[in-house]
Image (cartoon, rainbow, N blue to C red; front, side, top):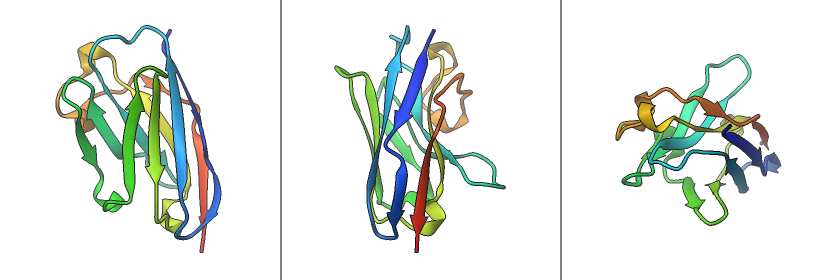
Length: 126
């Protein structure tokens, strides 16, 4: 069973930084899509950044605008999201997710994600 566990959320002032972590465990050895999503109260869940481990081509949502960076440590089996220059509109619950290898492909924005973490709350005050 694949499990994802996020951490690193918290409360910061606008302009501050946070680094989210997502530890992945379980049998997901083949190339697959993975990344970060977020959902603010009353809004739909949206993609923040995703990439295909097979070619490491990264997609960032337009609102990221160079402020966030996704990375991973294969030894630690951990996915990271470094968030800088945070804005109040970045406040949301952030989720890491992974798609099954058979569901994955180069266009990771459009695939079905089967594995989700429990989410970590990010609150940015003005």
